[in-house]
Length: 183
Image 1 (cartoon, rainbow, N blue to C red):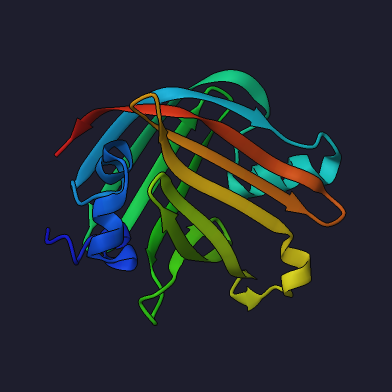
Image 2: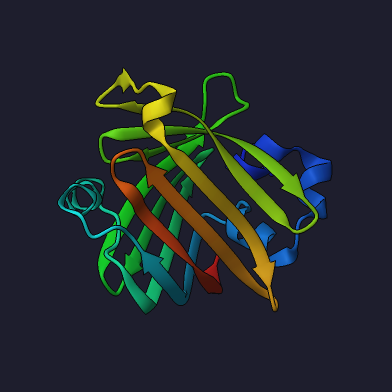
């Protein structure tokens, strides 16, 4: 696969891509298959609505020091991500938006549109728009999503925090991964 066909290098551009730490480039590069193992701390509100939404979207349940297996399968610019936490499996499909400037992540019935920003340490994902069951969700209802992919102590690091009105913290997970296989 050409680097321009790969999702993250194509969205960020060559100069930005080359400035990223090596673990971020390996995880978000163009290898057709990536497997990684690591650990994550998962937090989330315990109210019934938060628990129901996590189940609907396939999000992990709260728990500290959860073992995590992570797999990426790439076909062109489309990537299928499977995250196997000790307390749940989460699967999403990522691709470019039709305008080729936004990252789209489909998670169950929800589609998230992100604009990516970078610095020398990693990538920040800024939520731009949300739809559910194909219908636009008013931005105020979409809450706040903070997401960062970076490197720490030579390993891939991640931090995601999703807060929703009336729900509170839907899910937050942070941790690290070491790539065990990429081809």
